[in-house]
Image 1 (cartoon, helix red, strand yellow):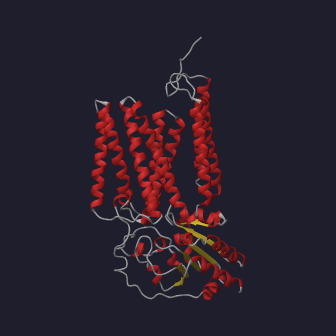
Image 2: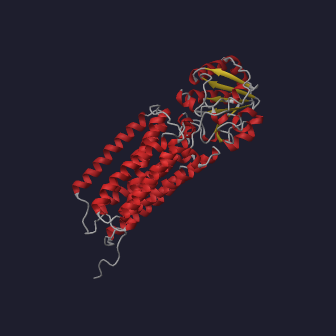
Amino acid sequence: MIENILYTTDGTPFTTGAAILELSYLVAAILFVIGLKLLSHPESARRGNLWAGSGMVLAMITTLLFHRDPEGNRIALTAAAVVIASIAVASVAGWMIAKKVKMTAMPQLVSLFNATGGAASALVALLEFPNVTGTGVILITLLGLSIGSISFSGSMIAFGKLDGRVKDVSGGIMKYVNIILLLLVVALIVLIVTGNTFGASQGMLYALLALTLIYGVLFVLPIGGADMPVVISLLNSFTGIAAAMAGFIYGNQAMILGGILVGAAGMILTLLMCKAMNRSLLNVIIGSFGGGGAAASHEQGTIKEVTVSDAGILMAYSRKVVIVPGYGLAVAQAQHICSELDDLLTGMGVEVKYAIHPVAGRMPGHMNVLLAEADVPYEKLIEMEEINPLLPGTDVVVVIGANDVVNPAAMDDPSSPIYGMPIIKAHEAKNIIVMKRGMGKGYAGIENHLFFNEKTRMLFGNAKDSLQKLVAEIKEL
């Protein structure tokens, strides 16, 4: 009888159970890919989550049933019970949080999830470091610890910023402090990998943990609020990379492939969003977005207001209306009344579409999620590149709570911090109605030239209240 000829990646004999385990990881990876593909479109995103979640459930169940250590021992029943209980408690907690969280707090929730993922990967590396051998595995463990720690502390600061609890800390010295910290992190990793004694490396390990946690905080602190969508997707990518490192530590293909997919998808999304803002990733990380000379170099002109009655008549007798949603729509929780306005106008024969900017809101896809919650048909959500050619023929553009993504300063003011950023060209429409609480500046902290356009009329007030009055006015026509 031939025994132990084949071995799995973690060194255990390739038995029937091991074969099932390896096959389940392959199936789980395929389900991850299918889920990721379905997530690329709002209409199929829900199914994408279910497919990817099924892959993770499969990987967890087969690991508990068929995993063996190098000596061939099963997972102890007590350990399995603890794992199952932890999953159950965390699942219930996650379900309750997801059901109760408001759509305005969704970016904060995403940041919190990023933080927990990074923390989990960092803890795996910290706990497994005494057990790893070989230069390659030690390096992977240290990278997992570093990236996971940065993702954790950085995501927590992002959470605080999005929740209004942490303010931006600007100043040119910050980038030099961060560069020094990063160099110290690299130096410590090199010293630990090349260290001769475990005791010295163990002490350095905790120093590395402290430095990376501090670096994560200082890395996110100076980044301006308008760059938060990019930062969130970048930290999400870090969490995926850290998870892949944890997978390498355990020789677990499901963790490796899942982490690589999350890391790659997050990095691609980060680069796409940087392109949408006409900025490099390096500029986002070390720069500060906001303030500047846009208002100073622009002759402001006159603000013109519009009454609810006039706005209602203008929209009701239009052929084409485009709504540009922004964070103000989310803050006011006005997506449902906005959908009602849409239905009302559509019933009167008006063609209504939504112009979606890639960085509108506080996280990638924020406006898509917000409007999907209000059952706005997916085909009405038009991306910036597709809607812009249609705007010159649009009768009315209604800007609801958006600011920087419709600011013409990006096109005509070289002194503006957002100059060169692709925008939704609302100023090209025949008429423009801007719903805004006041004349405050947007998240980038610069004046919006659109407000002073001769075709623009301002409808001041809370977005939800204004929309409700508008709906009532149109119903009476």
